[in-house]
Each structure stands twice: as C-alpha cells, then as structure tokens.
Length: 157
Figure 1 (cartoon, rainbow, N blue to C red):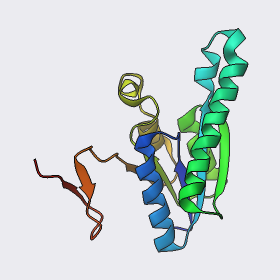
Figure 2 (tube, helix red, strand yellow):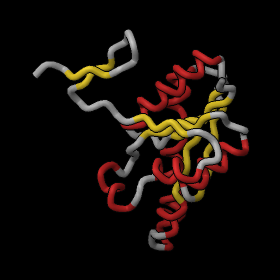
Figure 3 (cartoon, helix red, strand yellow):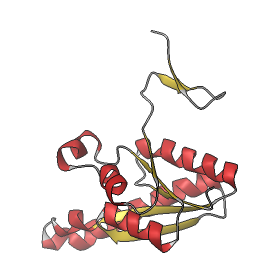
Figure 4 (cartoon, one colour):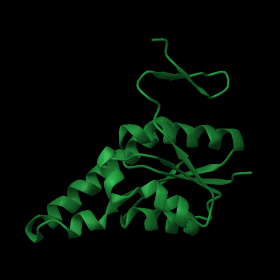
C-alpha cells in the first residue's frame, strides 16, 4: 500500500510522534522513509540583511539536528534532505519528486501556538499535496498511548 513515505520534521517535540508513526507505518508496509526538513526562506528573508547569513546557517544547523534525530530513531537506511523555501510548498514538491505514497507531518511545529495566528504548515500541506497526508497530533501531557491498538488513553485524574 505504501512504498515511499515522507516525514516532514522541524525537530520540535510535537513532531517526534509523527516520526514514530511514519517509522511504524514504514515497518508495517516495508516502505522507504524520506525525512525532510525545510529551512523557511520567509523567516530568513524577513530578518535584517546583516543577520540573514547567520540565521540561514543557524536554521540549517537546526534542520540537520532534526534529521539526525530521525536517523537516531530509524537507524541507517533512510533518506534525508534539507530544502529551503516555503515549508508547505517544499514538502509537497519533495513528495512529488520522490513519488511518495504518503506524507506524514505533525500538526504543530516549532512555532507552537503562534502558528495558529499565522496559518498552519500542516493545513497547507493537506490542502495542496498531490498525495495523501497523515497529520499526527502530539499527545496531551496526561495521555499515554495504548500499545495494544495504537489509540491514546487519558491518564486517570
């Protein structure tokens, strides 16, 4: 059913569950995994000119760290890429480029609650992706996954 899965990561805590879900799906379907991190060109372009090179370098370093985290969880054998541009557009373009069967993304990224005011990368990916998208929300702090069926359970109060 799935031969190629792309997981988009920005290294945030909320994306860790999306990475885990994508790796689980890949194991179940014997699929290839591509981890993608996008350096937000809008963030770089909106910064003062004298800081752009430093910011780009810092964002690239952060992206490398996010991909290293995926490698640590997955082990060898996954493809990893860093792109620069608008995150949603780059995620969709990468999905097309690798002929992905599924794109997996978290619902909240590095910008957390503030992204609700600016628009969600996950929402834009869902609306514009030519391939199916699985969005994975972060578990609430008081919820624990039930390993028997993959559903979440609320911890007793």
